[in-house]
Amino acid sequence: MQYQLHYWPTIQGRGEFVRLALEAAGADYVDIARGQPGDGEGMATMMHFMKSAKVERPPFAPPFLVHGKVIVGQTSAILLYLGPRIGLVGKSEVQRLWTHQLQLTIADVVAEAHDTHHPIASSLYYEDQKKEASRRAADFRDERLPGFLAWFESVLARNPKGSTHLVGGRLSYADLSLFQLVEGVLYAFPKAGSRALKEAPLVAALHAGVAQHRRLAGYLASERRIAFNEDGIFRRYPELDA
Amino acid sequence: MQYQLHYWPTIQGRGEFVRLALEAAGADYVDIARGQPGDGEGMATMMHFMKSAKVERPPFAPPFLVHGKVIVGQTSAILLYLGPRIGLVGKSEVQRLWTHQLQLTIADVVAEAHDTHHPIASSLYYEDQKKEASRRAADFRDERLPGFLAWFESVLARNPKGSTHLVGGRLSYADLSLFQLVEGVLYAFPKAGSRALKEAPLVAALHAGVAQHRRLAGYLASERRIAFNEDGIFRRYPELDA
Image 1 (cartoon, each protein chain N blue to C red):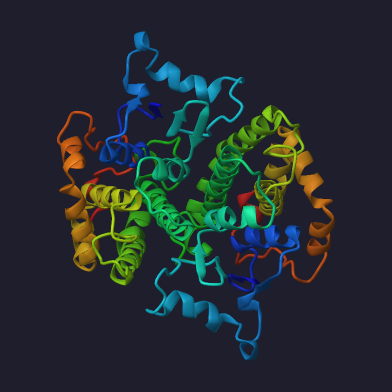
Image 2 (cartoon, rainbow over the protein chains, first blue to last red):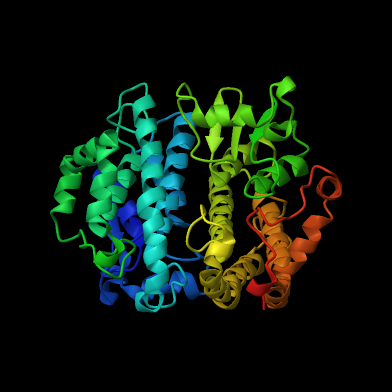
């Protein structure tokens, strides 16, 4: 059965973590909000699930996945659901739990990266919180980002199956998400991101390795990959980098 | 096998969501960092799991659970693991996924509640970010909190098994966590929290109902329940309420 991904159509955002998994697995999916209303797609179809009182389990926000009668929101929960179905997680409960724990920690970094440009309110413009953003971004660059990357580095170093992957000896959705996190950090913070990655060479190697994945490389070069932009989570505001 | 909860010993914090589940289920557990070094407990035991290079799957931060050879970090992942084992989640995959999705959304609110007093950096004192906190808290009180509560209200209203519980007709860990979220919000924002709850009567009723749970009521009245304080996630700074 085809997977329906529902997410804002003009940004990578949190939806990209799901897109990368679906693309790397070669799964049959449709990116609903980027489609045409005539095909039963487009923004109105996405908003229906969020607004209609007939939806028993409404998602709080995109992204969410519709698969037959199942509706799942929250990026990490979507990947928890998809992982075993598209072959992007190990078979044992311990492996699945560990992969999910890594994903949740990546989600924490993503939320903090977002708050570097929106530390006061998502509903306000960046221009209305620039001063606060400057302070928060400095803490992210100097403390949080290096701390998180050091943790992922230690996870890779301790993987008994080798440091190419976060969990076991095969690609998982957590590898794809860490790749995307690094992509975003290098886009938003070219200076601080490069500096932090020098201290986390295994993370940098994972990022380079995932980019070589055949199907993923095809996706990244395609028009389906939306470019980073200043409406998304990772934004390049030069004054926030150093 | 006994569960070991590892969390900071002087605050409710994120550990409290796990404590509530263990307590409500009457599970056999020990709150490691609150124990004595002579018993193999205390802070040093907790820090070992975070610092020792011999730990293959180190948690990024407390809380984490140790259960035999399993170590699980991230509050929501801990509850995902515990739920089926202690009877605090439904049996079907759809129910478990939905309960987890609710938990992840509660975790999002908790992170936002924390950032009302620490919008710039967790490593700085509140006093060093009071101005920014004032702006962020206003957005939380006026926009975010009512928005989240309205969503939980609709989830309760749409539960085909009745509005007493978030999922199905029985208590789940998500109910306990929503109870705790309301507790925290009422502590930190007595004015704005009460106002928001008036608009979410089913959430308010769930909060009152969970407090009546026999084992949970016993726990809440015991010394094991740490009082809210200004080192935790929910802090009462009167200047942030209105």
